[in-house]
Image (tube, rainbow, N blue to C red):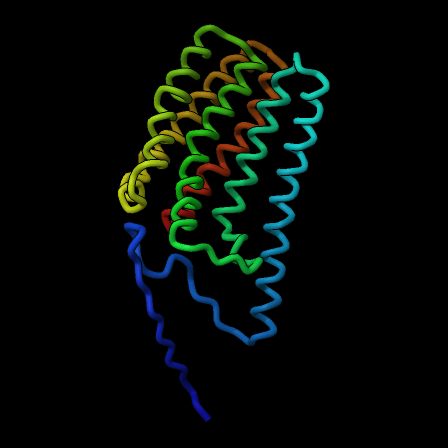
Amino acid sequence: KRDSLFVVGHISNFHTHKGGVWKPLELGLKEKVEQTTFYRTLLDAMIFGICMIIALYHLIIYSQRREESANAIFSFMCAVAGFRHFITSRFWQGIGFEPSVEAFRWLLAFEWITMPVGVLSFALFTLVLLPSVGFRRLTYLVGGGLGFPLIAFALIADTAKVNSVLFLYQIHLVVGALAVLVYLSMRAYQRNQVARWALLAGGVLFLGIVNDIAFSQGI
C-alpha cells in the first residue's frame, strides 16, 4: 500500500508570457472529480445561455422598434459578456473542445478585445439613456480613441506581446468603467431616476470587473 503519490506534469509555454499552473490542481476520486466538473460546466453553460437569451430578446425588440437604439446596444453588451464568460471560464474545454494553437491564439485575442469593447458598449448605452454633449466626447475619447488601438493591437500583435501589456487593457477597463460611474453619480445627484437605477447596475458590474481582474492576477 502506497502512502504517497508522485505527480509529474509536463508544462510547455510558447504562446503566453506567463507559464506554470494557472489554477490550483484538484485531486480526488474519479467520480467526485467528474461530478464537480459536470456541475461547473453546467453552471457556465447556464450563465452563457442566459446572456445569449437576453441579448437575443433585446435584439428582437430592437428589430421591431428601430427608434429605441438602447435595446440594440444592451443586446450587444449581453453578447459581449456572454462571449467573454465562454472564453474565460474555459467552458469550451468542459464540453470537450480542444483548439489548435492558432484557434487558441484567436480565443485569447477575443478575450482581450472584450475589455475595450465592453467599455465602449457600456458608455454608449449610458449615453443613449442619459445624453450629454460632454459625456459624448468622453465616450468617443475613452471608448473609441483609446479602445480601438487596443483592439487593433490584440488582433495583429503576437500573443506574448499582448500578454506582456495586458495591464493596459485592465487599466482602460477600470478607468472607462469609473468614468461612466462618475457620470451616473452626477446625474443621480440631480435626482434623475434612470441614472440611479443605472448607477446601481453599473456598481454591480464594476465589482464584477474588479473581481475578474483580481482573479486573472491570482489575487
